[in-house]
Structure formats: C-alpha cells, structure tokens
Length: 483
Image (cartoon, rainbow, N blue to C red; front, side, top):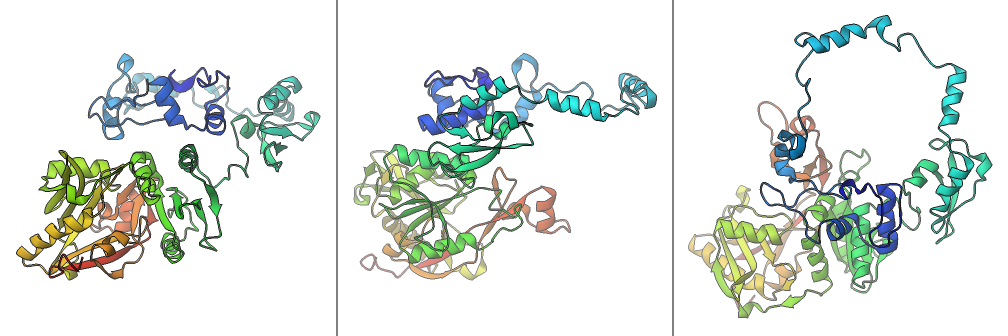
C-alpha cells in the first residue's frame, strides 16, 4: 500500500481522505504512531533495510525508501522500473545548445504566448472563487466525518471559503472553542488544548509510548522547575523529558535562548529531578537507546548483571564501533584504548579513553565513551572499568583521567559514586543543524580564509545549543577502597 493511497486504517477498517487524517486517527484512537503502524501492517513487522549497506531506510508518509540517507545517491542514479528518479531529458541543456528547447522558447515568446497581455476581470475572479467553494451537502459530510472530535458552531450558510475563512469548532473532549480553516480541519488539525501546538509529532510519540507501558504522564509541567517548563514530566519517578525540535531550538528561530537548556539542567538538579533532554534527530535515529535511557532513569531496566560477574576484556576499534553505535547516543568515537565487561560471551558495558583535545588536560586521559548495553543495568560497571583505565594511565605516566558529562543527559551521579570529583563546568556547547540532523561544530572549522560562521551559512546550517558539561577528574593514586 505504498503511499497509503487507499487511506484505510488497517486497525479498524475506517476510510480516510488524507494521510494526515489517518495519522491523527492512529495517534488519537489506536495510540500508535505512523512509523510503527507502517512496519506492522505494511512490512510484515520488519523494518526494511538499505539495499546497499543494510542500515535502516528512511521513513516518509506510510512507506520506506529503498536506500538509507547515506546511500540516497544510488537511488538518484537508478531510473524506470528499478526505482529512484530517472534523469530529466533537458538537464544541463539550454536554448543555445538544444534545438527542441530553442524551438519551444521561440514559439512562446511575446504575443505567441497564450497568456500574453491577459488577466482575470472581476467576473472571472468571482466565478473562480465560487467554483472553489464546497456545496452545503459536501461541507456537512466532511464536518460529520470528525463529529466525534469536534462540533462545528459556524452556521453552514455563513461558509464562504475553504482556505481563507476561519470556522468555529468546539472540541468534544475539553469543550474548548477554537478557530480553524476548513482546509486545516480536513487535513486533521487537532485540538489545541488536548494536543498543544508546541507538542510536535515526535513528542507525542514519546508520550504515547510512556502511556502504553503504564506510566503516569504529565504534559507541559510548570510547577517543578518554575518558571521553566518540562515537556513531559513523570511525577511518580521524578523524571523529566525535554523534547527539543531542531527548528524551534536553533538559530533558525530568531528569538532562541542560547542558555535555555543549561538553565533547565541546573533547575532540575536543584529540584531533584532526573532530567533528560533529547533532540529530535536522536529520537528519530536511535529511539531504542532513548527509550532505554528513560527506563533506566525510572529504574525499569529489564536485566541486571553485577559487574563482579563480568570479565574485563580489551576491545579493538571494530568491536568498539559495533558496541557504541548500538548503545551510545553519540555513537562511536576513535579512542586510544577501550575495555569492556563481558558476561556469557556478550559485551554489556564499555569504556574508552583518548588524548584530550585541550592542552590543559595533556597530563590526563579523557574518557571518550562510556555506555551500557540497552535494556541492561550493570551496577559497578563504571567503577570496575575505571580501575583498568587508571592503571593504564599510570603506566603511561599520566596523573589520572578526566571526562565531560553532558548536562542534557545527567549530572554525573555515577561518576561521583565511582570516585570522580567534580572539577568544574563548561559553558553551553553547540552543534550545527540543517533542521534534519545535527553536525559537530568541527565539521565547519574555519579554513581557506573563511570563518566557521561563513562555512556553516554556505551549507545552510544553523547553530543549535546544548546544556554544557560538568568536568570530572580522578587521579591515578585514588585507591580502589576509596572508590
């Protein structure tokens, strides 16, 4: 059912006139997002893989692409029955070098153009306007299709325009009266109170997932870190979740507060709230990791394995990449050395170290990545792996280890319990975004006489701010008993 042309809900067999309408129906009635619905009902429960590299393919409007974003150029080169886009016949040609284009251009110049010198008069404008209006019976039928959600308060006889006139609708759930154009109403516009405008589709996906697993969810709470707001608050677990859209939290939105995320992190820590701030691309690219991070903060990890039961092994770059890509939001990062905890032949935790970028830390190694396998809790993992990292640092003549703890995802409680000391904090960090993905700022490093800002601007990317980091350190002479 590519593109969902039938517009039939396969959960309840109800018909819909648009994909947007079907999508809203799935969220409000069946509590399921379009992505999950598409996988279950149209792809046999298995998400398709890229034909070239085997990665997850891109999802758009009830269908999956044949290739992932990295391999999209392959689809562009294919054409016809093989899929993708066939190259346009006139690509790269002009009237100066192509006879067919030159002939067409010459034929439609000046008075030869059928629209030359013509414009609509008042009569034709009125006629066109009337032809775009719906008849009363058609209008009533379209309003009735959503009568379980809204009651139309504007009299039918006062209807004049599908796109320009705002009609009054009353929500059947909260009884709020709100104005919508008929076009927006038909496309599935939701209640502004039951589904606030600042709640994006992916934020609703997070909320619906939490509700489905039986968690008490409070939306847009302004009480626990007043005057700031938490997008999703779980009062029973004292956990907060911030859902940062790439547009509304970037410089593309001119009135963006660059310190907002840092301020919320500080307020949440003072209030005893375990706050997790996630970006839109993180949820879209690695939803399973985000879910496990939330579950871990609620104390609901599926398996618990003591670090004492695990064997410490060194991991090469290939094994590190496999583990961190599946377990860490930021994925793999090159490292000097890495140690993992192995239980029954499976790596359940890993810590890697590298040489710090800043010279002030040249007498220490920096923790590049630390992660635990999703759905697993390994008490004591950080402490045990830190022991091996400190021994290596000591043999290399280093004073100890340092690390940055991103305040978007935590306050470093685990590091403090493992013997690390909070040294200080950084200012808000930042990335660049094309409003689809985020990119490390070093991608746009100044070069060739052009500044970082110039290079980012040419790439049509905007700056997006983080919450900064806490800096933790631990010395090589820190004994295991002290930790």
